[in-house]
Length: 313
Length: 306
Image 1: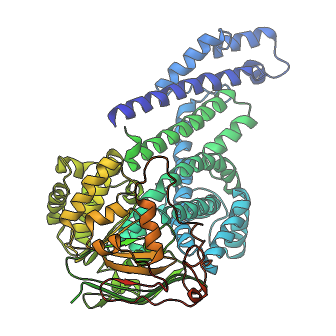
Image 2: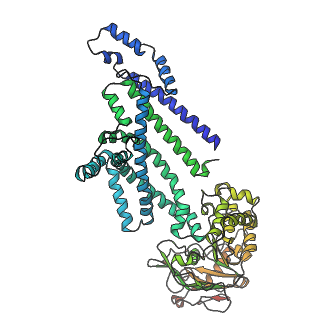
Image 3: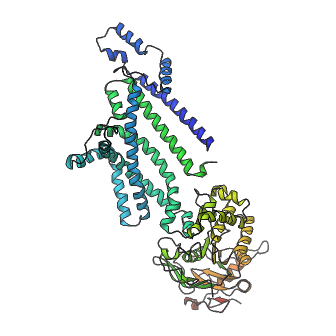
């Protein structure tokens, strides 16, 4: 296990390094010189050259990359060309908000999908099981932002029970913080939960046909007990795969949902950066998102190996 | 006083009758073989005794084990018998164990389920693994199933089956999936440790080596039953006769004797005597179903051999 962990960790770090190169290369290829943008169309060539020197964008790309990536290692994302403020702290603040949003959405999805999917599998011959299947099908067809808008309409506009948007930091007022996040969590979680329900259902159905479940019943367990004790962990192996993919999707989905609910997360920061042509900021946010996805994959792979002893040989 | 008494056991899947009116008894300590080709209803008979039939298959009739009903009662009332009074070893050892659980825990589970304290169960699990002659039982207990061979896994299944000292052990082709050398060791082990035994196989030599009495099934019915020596040396039912002829070694160059035709799919057996469409001795009389008659050595045939 230790050897596997070290190997997988090396792959993760290599992945992040490659991602840094690719992100930097793409951003460098984008047209638009930060110094020209900052000074506007009427700037003299001398002024532009001076600002370039100040930004450091007159240096060769390789030097710029080493400077930037070296800073990343120390948590320094550089200083914005547009606002002249350091980027690192901004990303740090926003990352926390997005993480809470994504993990909360995932929790909603799991809390929905595991019981519903299992129930649908156990009752796959009953009408109720079919209803759950059909409902999850509808859920899959609805994009998260649309679910968000519908939820806002019902709970915020009609019922006036929850705020339609905005974000109160936890430290300021935990109650308001929670109220503000309920709808965003629901809009992310409902859709992912629908997708996950179908995967849980088919994984449990597969496991129900396994011989070892019959063995468990031959030992004296009832069919429910056998499924609980021997089935669910086995079913969780394929579900974890989907969970990892979904976390990555949720991270991207959060960018849109943050817009709908006016939440100051990474997505909001990214869109602001793009609108303000703040290239270094965009570069930093994209890097963090890519690294997060790689990290999720790492965690999923390790989780597999903890769940399934057959993978460790 | 018999350990198991089965009377008029029938198994149905919807309108299809897969096992019909099977009756037999197993005395304490007795070893009974159940033989027949694939599709004759052997496994269904065993599974209905364990209450482990597939979802859409139902059993009727009676089967009593030490005064408790096994058939036609809800699962909640028979599950405390399973693994305690009656145990089963299945055909396929490779898939019968939970791949994510250590072997020792799977053996201990059957004991904790029936009331043994957790700590005692762990200790006894190792002792049981030793009893089924697994080398280094403590190490095996910590292993996962994929680290064991097929033969070793089947021994683990046997350890699970024996854990609570059941009165009856059912083995459904326990050696079919194993190598020939491992088969022999497994049979010797079953022979040594089994309480009363219902042993299902299509291998006549295996039955002869383990059992005292045999039931021959064809088309979902018991067509002949009796002490093994008598049935094998002097078969009366024409199907048993064909089965024995087909398993006998023949001189080089001669044709292998077979039973003509093949086993019909479920529900396509003829009325009356189920064997009559393949039987060389069939006459119009056979359109009526023969009853299983005879004390000791019984058979259901209008034109018996010998």
